[in-house]
Length: 245
Ligand SMILES: [Ca+2]
Image (cartoon, rainbow, N blue to C red; front, side):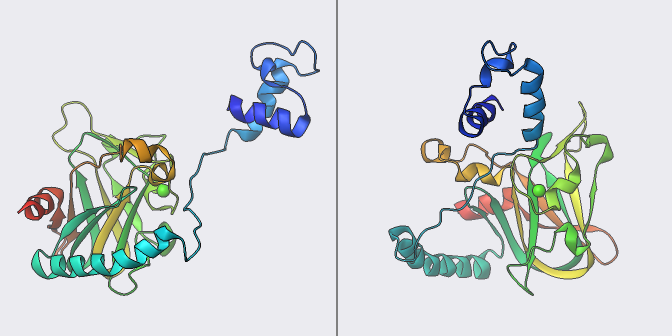
């Protein structure tokens, strides 16, 4: 926040305001109170990332054009062979599973504490449409005993990525770990579950040196059956074991 204040002071006001962070400014008419009143204006600011805007002839775009058909071929082999698998996309993780018609998905994490910025579900009707979005009328259920007042579950399907995450923490000694259910307004044919803990982190340059530090927890994806029970459609344990064969 102080960096923002220094930049605003120097570029917009033509004076240093940073001194007033600790005491009334010695030369300019900025009191410590003014400083903190001014910071209030920027309290809602979040740092964001964005995709690089590259021209079509950029070598990275050209390389992507070569790689996408190869990826499609690999996925076809996986779909016909295993039926399910996990893809680490750096900023987010995909769990692909066989086409499943269901009114709800349930995800069970195997860590006692999780931070998730967005959960997305894709299906066979339109593979680009995120069916989990709240704006589609989707309802979420979490374990109220694990809910965090500062990290409401609604953050996982508001369409926003970044540091504003759903937080869930199992109480000490709890046998169950954080879980969430995504209830669709009507039955959907789905086959891909995607999630991230801070997708925008990946677009910052740190990943060039440090790789993906996020590290995604293990989890299981279950689909609700017509009679109400839950059936596993994919799990990291299964997917990782199958891929390593
Ligand atoms: Ca979100």
